[in-house]
Image (cartoon, rainbow, N blue to C red):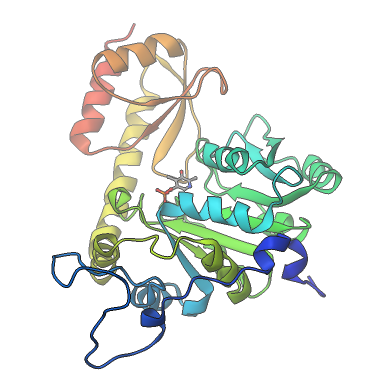
Length: 342
Ligand SMILES: *Cc1c(COP(=O)(O)O)cnc(C)c1O
């Protein structure tokens, strides 16, 4: 990664852009009168949120052990996926590379932005074929590689992840939406080593705050500055900012939630193993199992009939349904319903 120049990967028009800067957010005041933003003088939520999300970033900095200028905050990590594509991929010219199957939103945002989507098919154990990666990565105009680890919807983690970061001539995004459930170390620890790396995390899963819509990106200060340049100034609202900061201050909840979820995963694993309808349960480092059934259509319909919603992956992943761990009560309802299928 010697002679790495991030600017050679950035879209030309983005390089010329100045970020929208709120004077108010960049300065400290003792007793200010705010007549600068056409807000109302009264009302419960009358002020715009801090566009720099300074307080939240300070907390995240302590939590993750990384400087605040290496953190970007998005309206869910979904927004960050979109922003990363916007920063690096020229519409109609560049492509993204993603594992197949993997999280659909990479392809969705690439398409919205007018970028091609190159798929790297996983093998029967949902692993990447390194030779195929090297071929696909170097033959095409792919600028950003989305690596999901643990991967949604397969549940397994990417092995030897540094190999892909090292051998991709572009930006590598490691999406760690489920990292809290796995034993693997976060790639945040690799940021000093790889200037082309972006790590995504979210408050939507282990933290139990999907409704707040807050996700985070960790990368070099240069890449973070570019993401901040293209984001909407007030992308995360006041309510969400304060709720997330509260959650970080009381992180016992998240820790307990992770423990409970992992306990439910083991319970589900044992129960599912015993069912005749189940053909295979793929190993999972996340809060869900990709499960293969003998008669997937029948199973899915039966669950739905009982208002148990799961994520059918068949026919793309033949015979498979993705099922996440719920509360014990919910998991019992799932298992009891599956038991009625003969
Ligand atoms: C759930 C999920 C996310 C989270 O998206 P948010 O917008 O933060 O809610 C990101 N990536 C993957 C792979 C996911 O499964």
